[in-house]
Image (cartoon, rainbow, N blue to C red; front, top):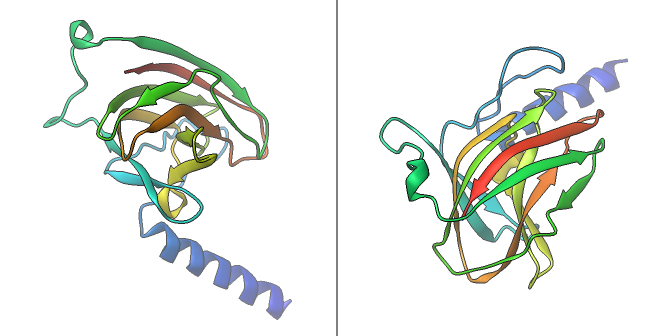
Length: 166
């Protein structure tokens, strides 16, 4: 029993250290939304920064609807502990902006990221940061053929709904 408690304590400490204090608590079935409130890098499995997500704020609000160029709908269902990417592929240049307004239901912590079809790598939020609301924009770091990616970190099926604008 003492070994189990020690392992659990170590796991909690590691998650706090790796999460850099940015994780928030969101339990399945609650009305609490877990929202990203500061810029976070999307990194691949080698630690390379693929993009940066910046949440909208009072100083950096969402663009006016008339300023948007191409808007696409998101309606994905992702099973427990699965990841996938959109079949829609975009050729993007370094510095390109993708605006997001996506909600995950039920309100559980899951990730939105990018998939680079050229390198075959996913880019997820650094430190394992998750959210149930992704309302902000991604700045792409490097040229490539990209798709939005979705990762369900829970043991229940989740739905991602909303829009993204190029």
